[in-house]
Length: 358
Image (cartoon, helix red, strand yellow):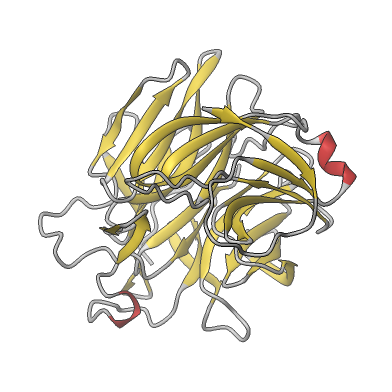
């Protein structure tokens, strides 16, 4: 499925639900350098429980997309010819009793689901998959032989609540966010051990707390990514996106508000533009912000009212394809792709890290 309308406008007010096509909303003329005004949105997967964590994995001259289904507890693989298959079973919860894990939410149209699977996905410098296993409350690495290595599941002896998103630096440093989504009952769960949500660094076998909602003015961390030069770390925090300067020891300092709006997952392109998933006027959207913090525009996803009602909510993005110009968008029960003019950032390309125990 493909459709496109190009407009020049600021954010639109919320309106009663009506069928709406994909729209490119231009806030600044610089958006024309990033996407064609007649770019088409392609529907590449549907009927997903809750899609998250898209990641392009290179293979030979091409590659394939993987993404999490947080409700189905699998990671799916989609090849360039459109074939969809299971890449990894039991991706986020490997236990046997799922009655007391995973936060329940309504994230797929009219259907209440439990967030039990993996969420964010990343590749390390050796091409191994790093997974936020949300209901297992751990960050794990999938080895080449299919075994899993625990990278982190505790901070100062207390279990994580539900790792959400992850990114790996080229030197092997792993950054991830921790949320309450791994807990049935969320913040009120009796299984909660850490009384705050935070974002962390895994390096040298240790886990280091970098910030979170217990800090003054802090919001609950969610999405996380790096700038193309790896000088900055972006972290969503409540209704803001924060930008941190990365220090020589891979910790962060000098936080500043970069985007003043709610965001979920995010990625950067090679020019340093930041692509964040959000909602504009009630529409699931991708916000594009320049490396200087200037709003360039939005990609507004369609509104579909057929029954059973799909919920189209932007959760995360990833660049892929042979030229890394395909922007893949996980959108709850669907996954989309749109062609960009500028390639996305490729991350993690040199020596690695070891497991962390906290």
